[in-house]
Length: 132
Image 1 (cartoon, rainbow, N blue to C red):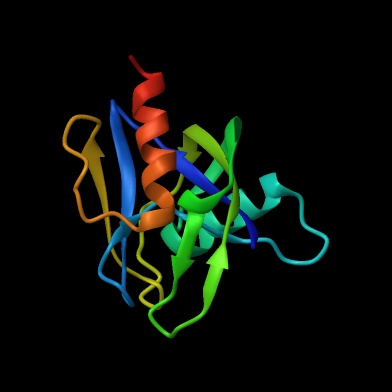
Image 2: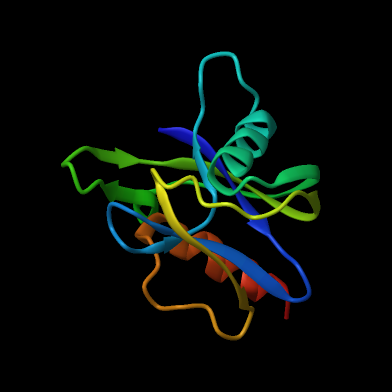
């Protein structure tokens, strides 16, 4: 499954969202729709899930492979190919969508929770590594 995610940063903090289905924390993001570019996916998903509009995105890295396997709570299994973008230039007020997202919270880079969605772990850990 091809998609994109956003590492939304503000004052050395990373925005994570708690999913309604799994209760795990993850990055805003999702799957590509027909005809979309990966950057369009990132911007659309960020807005749909958080109410925030990215004014600019910077490509971080593409992730794929066995570490991006995920089994959804309803049973579907996928291997994701994810284009990760960093965004620190955004506007709007945070607002959970109430469908996929039950909570939005900025975490300091040193206090990222352990309860992360499995396919987002390598993205988040690689991003934090790149800051050192």
